[in-house]
Length: 430
Image 1: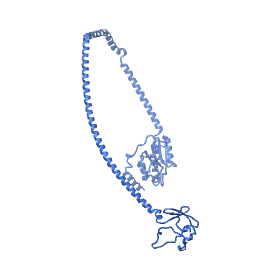
Image 2 (image 1 turned 120 degrees about the vertical axis):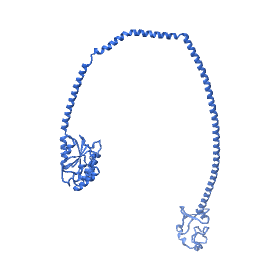
Image 3 (image 1 turned 180 degrees about the vertical axis):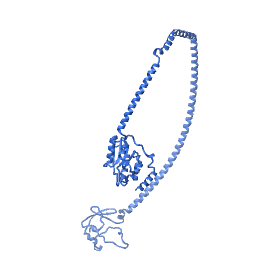
Image 4 (image 1 turned 90 degrees about the horizontal axis):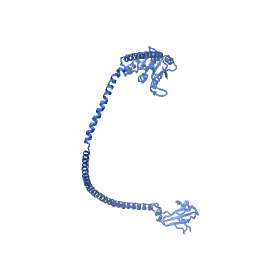
């Protein structure tokens, strides 16, 4: 069994299932922990007790058999099942998996050396801790898992930190942060006091601007007077240039410019109108030529279509006459066939059709009884008759028939050549 384990270990290692690059880091504080173990053993109680002592977390147990037949398939199915859970929902995927079992012999732990279990552990997307057996027990799942724990209790210790230690560490960090903040505030307060002592007073800051303001106030009246004089001289120069004669001359020039522009506008309008008339005449000529060409083309197409319609009409008349002749021949042929197959032709050759009172044909003499009302159909009409004598009369010889008995004229019935069938009895009264 050890040789088989070594052989399987080399095979899986050659596939890269035991490489350190495949292993995932364990979450620092998982919210949900999935445990694959027996629900009735001491392992799950040790894990829950250890988690309660260190940091209580939500635990999901997937019950499996930890030894015997079917153990490996159940463990692999549990790992795949945890990985198949959704990220959100009432049953969310756990953040960490623990595959745990207590100590035992090599035979008891053999299911955790199965290839299906090792491959499921290597393919798990959830970080996995293998806690199978005691510290001295080694199985192949320990190499494929992300972390190997010597015991199930140690797996619980690796899964979560100690809550009290975290609280003490957080409290220490809070105190250190508060002390650092206080020292920073004191340093800034000292720097602010030093900077305030180095700043000049308000009188010192406003002395120079106040002096500049006084100088500007002293120069302002003289500057206003000089500015007013400059504007007055400028307005005087402009008023000299704006006399009535200057304005009248400018108005005259503007009027001449308006007259010239009006004349140019009239000439431009005349030229534009002439150009439009020329373009219109050209377009009219092109349109007339196009209309004539279009009319000629339409006449040619109409003539061709008329010729085609005439030829089609002639073909249609010939086809109609041919079809009528064919239909007439077909009708004549059908009439000849109908006459050949109809019983009227047989009646025309001298035969008669005998029916009973209900209109049903009588084919045998035995069907006729004495006093029976019958109907005899010839080719030119019907004759009602009353049968005399019993049906046994059909079997009598023709020589025994009365001298006044007559048979229907007509050709002899079909039969063997040279035969003379005269056994048909008379249906007429004496």
